[in-house]
Length: 123
Length: 152
Image 1 (cartoon, rainbow over the protein chains, first blue to last red):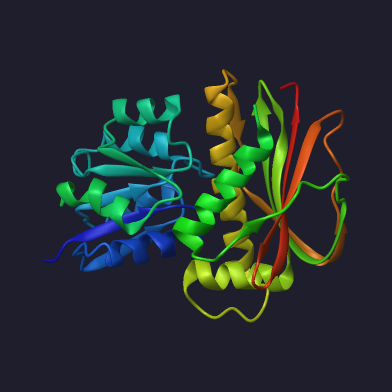
Image 2 (spheres, each protein chain N blue to C red):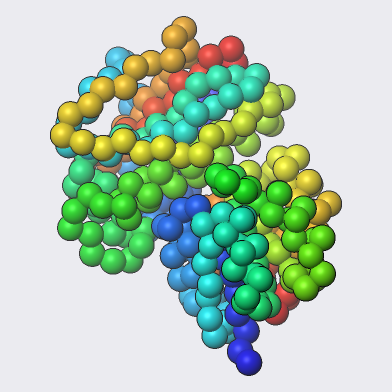
């Protein structure tokens, strides 16, 4: 089965731009799934398998930090790498995300090159 | 902290890296703008050591042009794509301002973006806040980036 990625962001614009940037970066995903917040992502992951997750932090309902906290307690999905894509590039919240298992961070605004640099080694 | 430079640098970076439109900053306005016609405004609240808001105010045609370039598709009307794109633009700008404030020793949190649009609406200022409003010009017209900060 081909590789699949899940993009979590409450902004439909940002989900489209992340998807486009993955293609522009030449990253070979066969399917790009989308969720609007952490809760929607956890529900989706009950029935769908993915190889990588890209997640915003500041979202309504369930933010990216709480998503990481709950995900790492669920055996079937705990090992999926998560890269945070957020405006909060240099703040303490990035450290909190890494402590909860985030594999990397991409600050908005970003270029396809930055996406490739951070994600290329994870797939 | 140089709010004007932070706004100008952050706006130019976003347009150069993600929106791909040529942009020219203008001189900051001497009076704030409270009333808007046929426009879209993306707004982010700031809380913590400093309180205030960041907003981007775009006439409809400018909002459609920004969204069209942002998403790489034709946009003919003010729809959810436009309001989401302008809200996300405000979100990225607020993130850059938050990082600058954090670097100056402030502890600031940002809200989820909100978007207002319509034929005619007005927005009130944060009471007793310092403010700066910077006009930017792109091919389709001019838009404003506004930052209000209190207790900073």
